Structures are given as structure tokens and as C-alpha cells.
Image (cartoon, rainbow, N blue to C red; front, side):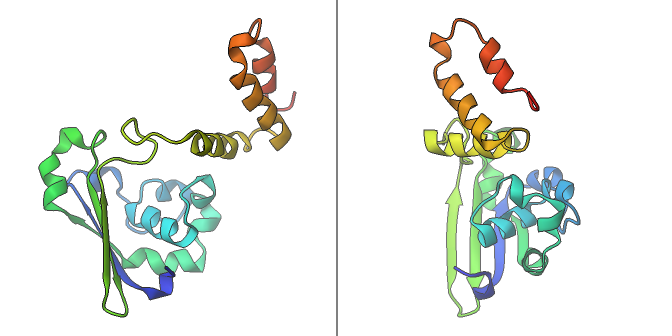
Amino acid sequence: MHSEQVESIQVGVNRHMPNALLHAIPTDGLQAKFSLPYAVAVALLDRAAGLAQFTDERVRQPDVRELVPRVEVAIDPEAEAAGYHQMFTQMFTRVTLRLHDGRSLSAQASFARGSPQRPFTRDELLAKFRECASLALPLARVEELIAAIAAIEEAPDVRGLLALAQPGS
């Protein structure tokens, strides 16, 4: 699926979600972290929603700036029925893509990937750890740290692990 094929994207949420995700069209990476239209648009464009997608530079790129306004957030009756208390444990969301050729594609999810109800696989968790840790450590050190964490039960103490986790050491 290419963004050029998409006429609009409708995201159905409960009425409380827009209170937390309040930036319709973000202008920087921080606002993007609180923007459902941005998160949906960049996920479609990049097939990812990691740290690289929530930077000032990515927010300001033309493909993102063009797609974000086509994402509409609306109250979905099923999401609303789940109630506010379910917002973070069972976030029902429906996404519908309306294509220029007249077709509509729709999907729904009740739990976010990485939540206790839909946990990451080991590979997904390691990829996320690598992405985050590589902001502070060289990749070789990140791999050493992963190995040290995997062997933590055999370690005499955690001093070696802590040393690996220190930037610049």
C-alpha cells in the first residue's frame, strides 16, 4: 500500500483518546508523540513507529506533511462502549483506509503491540532495545549488554552489566 493510493484514513477511538493525543498536525517531534494522526500517517509511510519516526526532521518531511491532514479521528461506538477505564488496558481502535479507487480497507485492534495482552516476541523486544540503547551506546556495546543481560543469572554480581550500560566507558 502506497500513501498515494489513500484518499483518507479514519481512526475510530473513544471520546477520551483525543484528550491525550491532542496535536492534530504536529510541528515537531515532541508534538508528534501526542498526535494520533501523525502516528497513523508515519506508520503507513514507514511501516514503523519507532524513535526514528518521532523526530523533528521526520515530522517536517513532505510525505508526512501531506498525509497527516488526511487522517481523521472520530468517536467509534464500540470504542466508546469499552469505556474510559478500559482506555489503557483495552484500547479498541478501528482504522479505515478509503482509497482513491473507491475501496475501503478496515481493521481493528483491542490491544497495542507490546502490551501485556499482546506482548512483543523476543526478536521484537530485542529490536526495540537495540533502537533505544543505540542512542547512548555503540552497537557493539549494545550487543555485549544484551549478552550480559541474558547471562545475568550466572554473573557473580551486576558490576559488569552496569559498566557496559555506562555511556562513554
